[in-house]
Picture 1 (cartoon, rainbow, N blue to C red):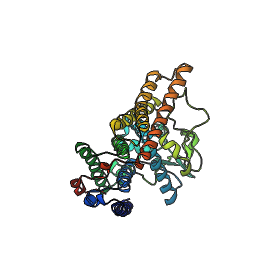
Picture 2: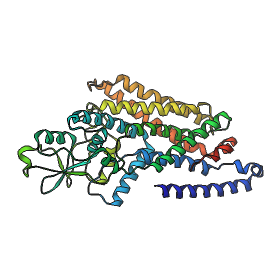
Picture 3: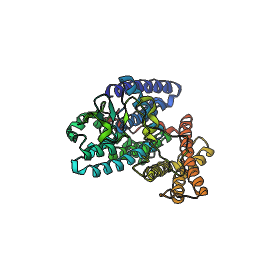
Picture 4: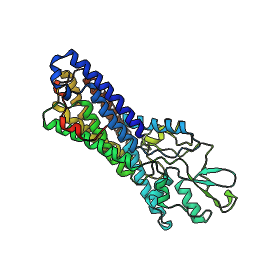
Length: 403
């Protein structure tokens, strides 16, 4: 991760330098401020690196069975790309898992499980070997096995689970420095009456959403490769054991859905499987339907959309390439706030909605997502005509360590 960040930072600095030289040669008035000039590439580069660092450290993928190094990398990359496009879904997933992990910890309290044990179990960290094959062990089945005495309580400590994590202090330190620098330079630009680009506003909003991710997943191991294998005391699974576990060679029908049972699209489900290529959907579009009410996931998603809209309203009086784009930005920002609020008002957490209210609720969510996409388009379109002060830097912020 660190070599990748350093290489990306170097390439962006080279591109920014080339762009600055080109701009200076075309605009003589820029020569005097070339040292305090930042190009579009420089702006995009700092935003992209900030998002990459935040997302890379925030995403905690579940264990994928039968994976190799390439499929594991592609799997995590797919999750990161999805989280960059729709960070609100990642937060909804993290919050739902956090709620469910606390429930698991409560269920396993007599076995002295910590929150790390609960997260590890939830992410597929325990596998059962019956003498012929390994099977993924779900938390509810795990509890039944323990109560029946079919297996022993896992002999794995919280420290050993943390040791499986791929997170390290240096990467977290880089994240903190980059995030603090980015927030500081945006605030300082505002206090010095320098233009803040829409790209920076959007990056600020997405970086803010990484904070609840760290909170909810603080006790979750970062990308462990293999599960901890448990062995049956008896070779016969059918005699004492539940029959709902799944083979690592087959598909798991334990779906993760974000929508409520009354309004979900019946034939468009995102299934949990043990195959890397099929897991991306369930990783971010979730709400575990059999244990945790989808109300938690929907509430978290709605809150994130409201937060995104609130941050984007900061650009209410910014300079836009056209008046039409400014009005569209305002409408989209307000829609991003109002649509989830209307959804939460008309939605019944018990899932007992009249048909018309169900249609209104789903419509509000779709409108909110369309508003989010519209803001992304306007953000990128604004780069074609930035105000002059957007290219000026606050010189002293460049001395703060950052990528």
